[in-house]
Image (cartoon, rainbow, N blue to C red; front, side, top):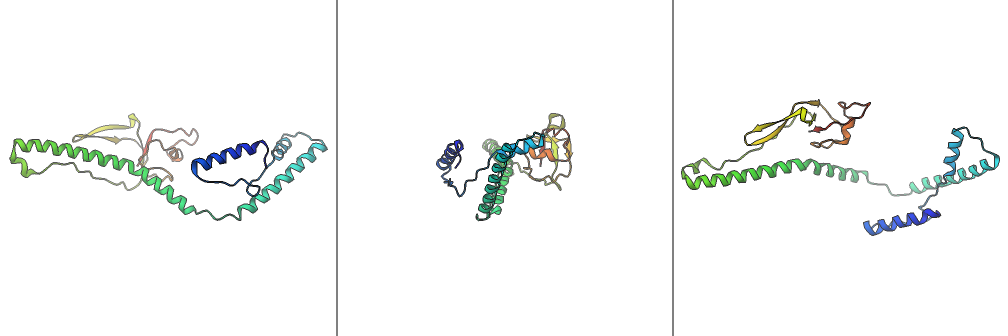
Length: 215
């Protein structure tokens, strides 16, 4: 078992068991010790530092020990049950879906509030003038226009403007960074997504991120 490291590892595992209710065994069968000496030896060789026979033999012994531990580790791994990657992917897809729903839910809530306000105003008008009852209750209707392709646009103040749509204010994006952008791993309708660093519209030399909007 490891020397001074043992207490640290045991403390982390105990904390994990208490907080997550998951008990990770800490036994010789699932613990693998790798000496740092072989890595130090490689660094010395790379920098052209000569070693005497006694030092070389010590490094060889440490190297052989690490090789045996690595072999034991591989043998242990192949006996473990396979991990269901599809389950992890499903969780990731669910997380992405939840993120995408945040804006539609907010827009729906805002639309409902506006219609409630319109209904209250209409009620007051009907009480004072019953003739307008036949006109019905006014309401705002939202219409979603889906783009043919996903698009990356800039949300900087210089690249967009606020336009008035009836009683509503909306953003109009004037600058299109990448008209047809199928970059993977990007959350739609999210500002400054780190994955946008790999978009073709980004400078690969500087890696500079701009405030952009993907939808």
